Amino acid sequence: MISKQKVNLSPLPTEVLIGLDIIYGGAVVEYEKELARPQVSPHLVGLYKGVLEYYQDMLTDIQEELAIRRFNTARRL
Image (tube, rainbow, N blue to C red; front, side):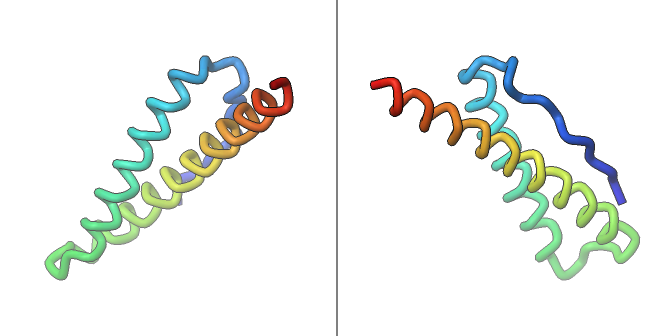
C-alpha cells in the first residue's frame, strides 16, 4: 500500500492545479483500464490498485482546492 500524506496545494497557481487535474485524471483512467484487462498479472494487481488509490486521492485533493478557489472567486464578484 502506498501511503499518502496530505499535500498543501494552496501555494500552487491555479494553472498548475488545472494541469495536475488533467494529469492525475488521465492517470486514473489509464490505471482503471489496466486493472480491467484480463491478462494483468496477479502480482501487478496490488501495485496497480495502490497507485490508483493514490492518484484518486490526489485528484480529489486537487479538485477540492479548485472548487474552493472557484467559490472564493465567485463570492468576490
